[in-house]
Amino acid sequence: MKTSGKILLAPSLLSADFSRLAEEIRDVENAGCDWLHVDVMDGHFVPNLTIGPVVVNAIRKVTKMPLDVHLMIDAPGRYIEEFRKAGADWITLHVEAEKDIRETLLAIKRLGAKAGLSLRPKTTIAELEPYLNDLDLILVMSVEPGFGGQSFMPETMAKVKTLRSKFSKLISVDGGIDPKNASQAIVAGANVLVAGSAIFGKKDRGQAIQDFREVCKKSS
Image 1 (tube, rainbow, N blue to C red):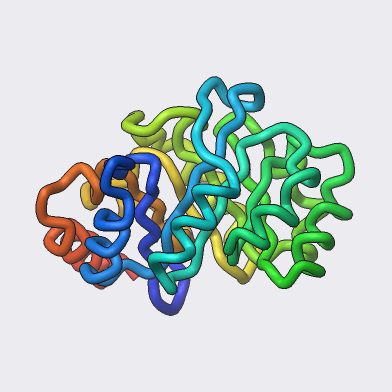
Image 2: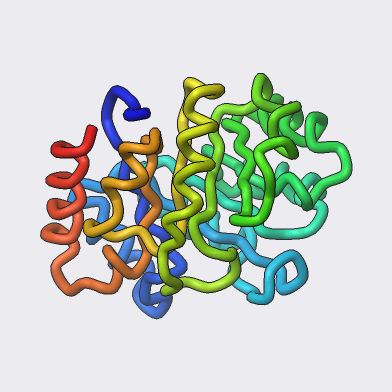
């Protein structure tokens, strides 16, 4: 089921050059992306360790774009206030990571941010369904979370299609997304595309984003 409206592009900073992060951010912002996707990993919930609120705060200082902060961490409710204060506009957690999901989602909203839940490839839609009315965004992982540069899993698009029939707001797809497979996500019902190496891995970010825009135009 195709979605209507603009398809949002959210480059994933996990694939950026952190030695020149401000320049990298300005590069994709000037190239016309819509959001920045910020992957936060704690080395426990997923087997990788990335950034925390201090870096999110530094990112916030160099861009006005919405920051889509994806918490791949245990017990994220302990940190949502810090990430919100640091500048997160969207805060997404995993359904397996928190005991009281609904309260955490409501706490995110009380802080003035938008709330999302993410599904790993093996996580069922049934685990998320009780919270559909509490969500502003659903993030469907099209790779196993933890590391960038993985291959897109097309079988996860069935999950996007089913969710689109139940959920009218934003559905994001993250993992191995590039201009060659983006149409599969869009046709299934996604309206946010998270792309890491397919944007930050290219020398010409403007052309990379234009390539995505062309696919979005043809597929939506």
